Image: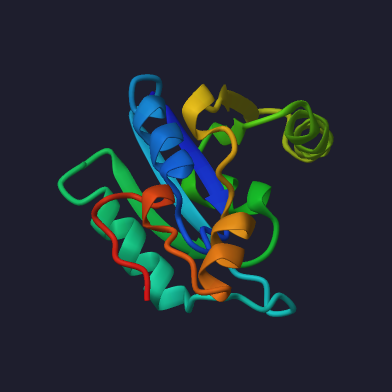
Length: 153
């Protein structure tokens, strides 16, 4: 059976941390679906189309990575995709506490789907999309925090 993992997030924007988690997960899974969650109540900095384009560019030529967008519960998206795993990256103990609760709820909703955590590499642990957006909003250069293949505007 093909091992499929869903890596959900808003990726607003995608960071080097996200890129690292996906690349490392390719050693564990046959396919990684980078799933852009769409929440109509949330205001995004970058358009869905821009985020989808960037993710496609970052993983261009990697046939084990697929980019999809979805609405609703992540666990329902996993079921629809035939994924057996939810992939999450952890930067800190605060991330762990937050993600553990979600993982336990997902397990109650879908006992056959496992949540898998990968620790961020130390040099990328401080990077998150919120901080990157704040740098951009305030006129700073955030290029060192995003994958080399994308250009922020």
